[in-house]
Image (cartoon, rainbow, N blue to C red; front, side):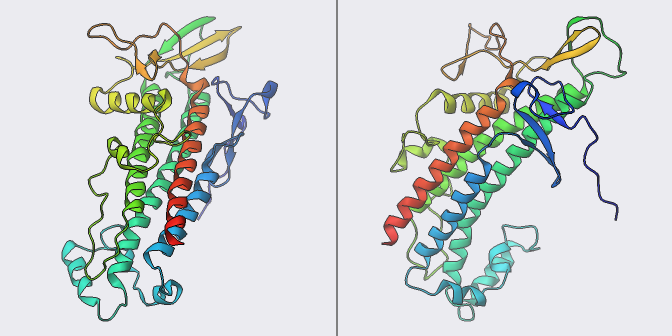
Length: 332
C-alpha cells in the first residue's frame, strides 16, 4: 500500500485565503498540515481540553452506574456486542438480536447495567466525535479557501475585487454550513448527557429507558446549572448566533441566494480571499420585512471562524466538567 504524502508547499494556510511557504507570516495565526491527515490551527483550538473533560466524564459515569460494584472485574464478562449492537456498524445486529441479548442476564452479570452505561457513554462519545469533525472540517474550509482556484479554467485577473460562484465556492459554503450544524448537534448532545447525569437510573432489574431520549437544546431549562456563565447553557449572543445560523441553514437553505467567494487581486496576484456572512445583531440576522440577508457590515467569516470554534470548545469543555462535578458529588 502506498501512503499519501503530506501536501506540497505552500504548506501554511492563512485566514485571509492567501497561503504561505513559512509559518507565522507577520505574526498571523495559520493552519499547518498534520501527518495524521488534517489541517491544524497554530493556536490552541480547545479540542484536546474537550477530550480530557470527556474522558473524565466517562469515568464518572462508570463510578456512578456501578457504584459499590467491581466494574473492572465485571467488564471482562461482557461480550463486545453488548456495547455495539444497535449503536455501531461493527455489529451487524437487528432489534430482534438485541431482544435475544436481553435473555443473557443469567450469563452476563449486570447485563442491564452495562447496556445502560454504554448508552450514556455513547452520548459522550458522540460529543467527542462531533468536536473532532468540526476541527477537521474547519481545516478543510481553509485548505479550499487557500489552495483551490475559485473558478475554472484558471485565468489571469485584472487588479481589483471580483466574486466567483462555482463548485469550489459551493464546497466552501457546504463546509461552513456543516460547522454550524455540528455545533448545534453538540448543543443537543450536551443537554442530553447533562439531563441523563442528573437523572441516572438505579433500577436495573430490566434494561432501563433513558430519561434524555426526547431531549433537545430547548430543554436545557431542566438542567440544574442552566444559564451558568461560560457554559453552553448561558444566555448569550454567541450561542444565539449558533442557533440562528443552524436554523437558517436547515429550514431556509442558503446563507446567500447565490453562494459567492470574493478575491482581491493586486499586481496580478491574489492578496485576499474571503466569504461574507449576513449581518447579525445580538446573534440574530438583521431583518426588514421579508428580507434577512444583509451584508452591509462586510463580515468576513473566514477571519473569525477559528475564534468562534475556540469559544464553542471552551464552553463545551466547561459544560462537561460541570456535568462531571455533579456526578462526582453524587458518588460521595
